[in-house]
Image 1 (spheres, one colour):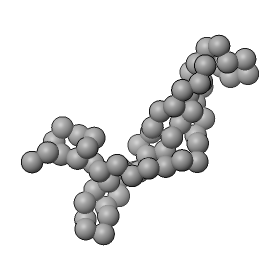
Image 2 (image 1 turned 180 degrees about the horizontal axis):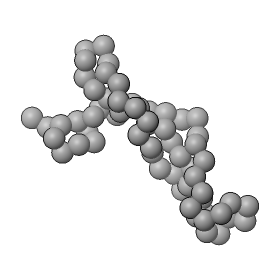
Image 3 (image 1 turned 180 degrees about the vertical axis):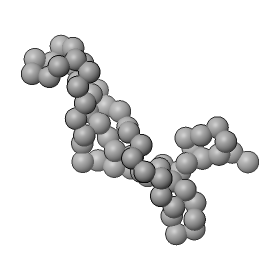
Length: 61
């Protein structure tokens, strides 16, 4: 079975100085996949930027 998850790679600031988290997509393989062991992860080439305030409880005003 295959699923996906996002791993935080680095915190960067945009042009206005607002911190964002650079995340990389991971493909997660669980039991039931013939050639992959259970719990195996493989990085994908997909990335996203997420505002830090959206990921932390201290980001709100």
